[in-house]
Image (cartoon, rainbow over all chains, first blue to last red):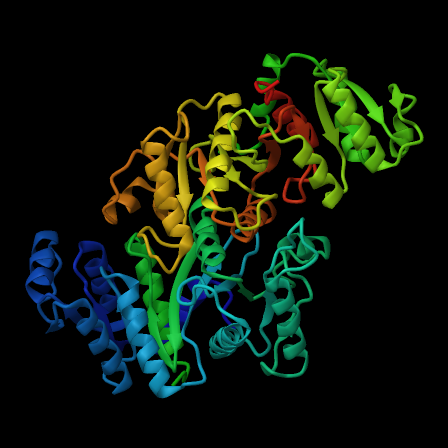
Length: 296
Length: 293
């Protein structure tokens, strides 16, 4: 079981490099991370994008990409589709988002997931590390589903719990977030949280622990803000809450964040386009660790 | 970087001493802060209702037989008659309290929107930073969001923040009709640009990363004075606001205080998302909101 991003990097280095499709590596930060990922033995990159632009960026930034494999695709949707097809055909182990709108990758991933595993819902999982907690925890889904219903939430949780198992968590601890609104007795999110807890108790998600709390204040009252008792997985009610929360942790609270989008056994690293190179290299290690854990 | 809220106490020197009616349940933390505020000369307290009997040795007690609801009704009369200038309610935060607040909605800007503003200091620049609405509106409409921004701007003004910059948050920085928060945020930015929201600069939609970093925003093609220099974060809904505020309060080094905004007289309460020890900060924040009287 890994508890920090450094442990994930160490595990990835032990595993050794895997082929990874880098989608639209059109700026220097992305190319730097790819280059260092290759030097660190994390990836054997396949650069997919506008090759002329990639070469020009590399030359301007002094990044030696001469030996890297490149595939010309200018249309973003065609490029995203190609990356997922390469993963589907076992030509690469995972894909990495470069300078492209995430929407293109989500579309491709939804298509492939429907084909491979129609019962699954692709979801984004953001892993965080905060000094106050001293272990990684994840928030899902801040990226793909805008307003997931109960069935979608079940699929998102099943997906995320499986990812944690692949990282060595035998029984991940889950908390479904649904704040109590002061003017209402209940809410849809609270009701769905209760149903998800009941489903978990009935064994719907396999070995895992669901906390009865639905917000952090309740958790704090129960003494849960310690590494041993803090949840591994938080399910958010919708994309507004999830996306703003993960970026609040990252930017307001100075935490560390690594994002991956999964579905149908496909692994797509989805760093934000605003992420710098240090964030991206740790992201590569996460992709490698997940790809080597027999997700497919 | 010091992120304590003690800077708020420095603003207390600008306070005009007010008569404050106290209602609600017996809350030792609130009582302690109240007596400290009195001793510092910030307010003259007037307890109202049977539940505040423990305060009788310390101050006058009005309506000694009234329950909390009756005491709140009585306080509205005192306010109308000019016998008190501000209110402090120790809870509970129930429907009765929210109805009480509804009666106190200001009408001077035509919005009749009451909202809550959470205040903490940024780790990045040490400045007071405002999150809103962190208590009252579950899914505010565009009109309500406009009022929430104006309310937060008046809180910012009371804190000495001139021409506050507002990030209208969404999950992404482009307008997507499938995500209503992005549409509202864009409309609010346009309303502000046309001068409809007063002396504020609003940018939106902004995801939190490009709100916090001018470089990240520039990377995404957003050219605006707001990213990297935000005073007020407008959240699209209560779940987004509360979850983020709870994480900031529980897992960060931050103290979080809060204030009701949009009322015709200062109202001091304590939200669960506020730090437990923030009552005294909340009192100063509340008393600073005096311009509407």
